[in-house]
Image (cartoon, rainbow, N blue to C red):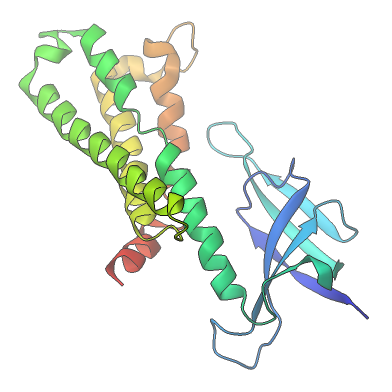
Length: 233
């Protein structure tokens, strides 16, 4: 009839456990080259045959999920784009996803700057240490670059254009930066870095939580390696 029957699975689906609808790219023709034969749909996540299994992360959160599809029926009216043109549709969704991640991703720079202003080490205020100041200056430049790169994306959208590779740049810079800042803050804390209780830990344990959550940002929406390929091409 007018339905498609979907079988398969997908891992690392953010927010699937509380989402009402999902985007699904499927292989509808296995006999053509990789980027062809794909078709995109939107579906009701409560549809029969959809099973969501949350994945518990190191930071105690459950933001990602594995989703299984067993004989899930999707009406053709829920197809996005033409049959076999799912790759083109997915480029639009991926670029918008990378823009939303790269433009809004917390880098940790305001937090580390405030932390270094307040922290007193064995050698005096951390902010007076030339090595600390050098790190902060480097991150300040990156934070500024991220801000203006996101402005480029917003300008393109305002002109009706599709978000481009600048969003991959933003995400590629912001993810590792968040991880580096969290690791540096933990180094500054020294032995006190083992405390995770917000009542006991320096800065309320925010950098410990940041360090445990930061690797996910280098995977979500495309890994560092994939993004480098996209930017180069």
